[in-house]
Amino acid sequence: MRKFLAVVLSLAMALTAMLAAVPAFAADEGVINVYAFTTEVPDMIQKFIDSNPDFGYKINTTIIATTDGLYQPALDQALAAGGADAPDIYCAESAFILKYAQGDMSEYAMAYSDLGIDIDNAIAAADIAKYSVDIGTRPSDGKVVGLGYQATGGAFIYRRSIAKDVWGTDDPAAIAEKVGPGWDKFFAAAAELKTKGYAIVSGDGDIWHAVENSSESGWVVDDKLVIDPKREAFLDLSKQLKDNGYSNDTQDWTEAWYADMKDAGAQKVFGFFGPAWLINYVIAGNSGGTQPGEGTYGDWAVCNPPIGFFWGGTWVLANKDTQKADAVKQIIEWITLDTTEDGLQYKWANGTLNGEGGTKDTVASGTVMAKSNGELAFLGGQNMFDIFVPANQFANGKNLTQYDENINSIWRDWVRQYTAGNCTREEALASFKQAVTDTLGIEAQ
Image 1 (cartoon, rainbow, N blue to C red):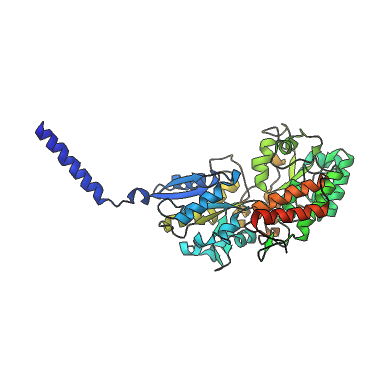
Image 2: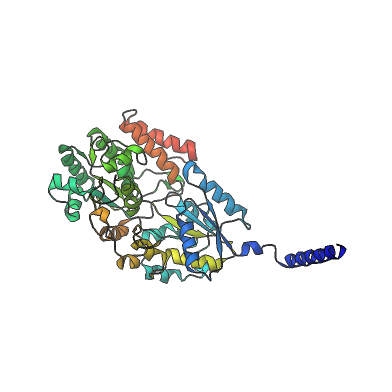
């Protein structure tokens, strides 16, 4: 027994010595920390790892939804604290990307060029939309610190059967001329639709993103609140919708809004404004069917909107203090700049990321889009890329601020107070300005 115990003790001492010789951080050397607000980007990274068995890294993912305002504080704390648990890669969506690419937290982002990416040539080769690059460029040094993988230029998404009933055609070029360019033509079309018992949109939220992202100025200029004339006009556009019954007066992201996508609202709704992701991940799933002939599935098309805009998008950033720059570079290049058929964007555009027959989406690379097929049964066989690719050129990325998420919420609330008749136009503007000051400490010009 004594001899056995001596052997065990000897083995234990040898194991202890071996462990002591391993650096304390070895367990983390092969791990890349990722912060995100959905599973989308982490799933992409996992797909990259699975496709590259020699990559040698695993991911440790922290996912915190943006609901209830929890994601940004957690990300901010993790970036500021640094250390082994800090994110190597992190994500920011359009509502708050400027905070991380250009604003208060931009100092934590590593420039793509510092990762070793030949960024100017890579952007040119991939034909990345200008608005996406502008948003991800840090003003202090002019360096790109974030790029997206989606293209989120917007179109008008409309019902073919309603178009035929009102105008005798569902041709995208003809419908584009009916609803635009400009809001005057859009509201003229709304009046024609109304005579047949149709609403042109579900609610004022359907036109807000087109208004917001077509404005010249953002909400904050030189630390002062600014109301761009195009955004102020939303008060009048919203009231015009409500007073004339041109919508069902729904609020976006509510059950009533979803119901209008499958003809379950007070009036049948002609269309919605949005990028390809709105079709793929919202309207299709709420259409009441899964194939043509079921619900409204297959009865949709897209055309040029009355005014150019974009809505949404996710930008991918790297931590300036990452110790795994080469691995991070490989992942970020694959997601944001790779134009080959093995890259994320080609697979994403053609619906092959998880095998044939997946969801097709518009991507950031015009080069990829040019060699991809955007035909969708949901759109009656239309190639949506014919509309969405040019749409990206009309999007403006210079009217965002790091305060948009909060200010937009306040603005939308007071617009609805006005259209409901609870206050005058002047009272709505005054109350909005005061609420921004009270909430964010930003005073109006």
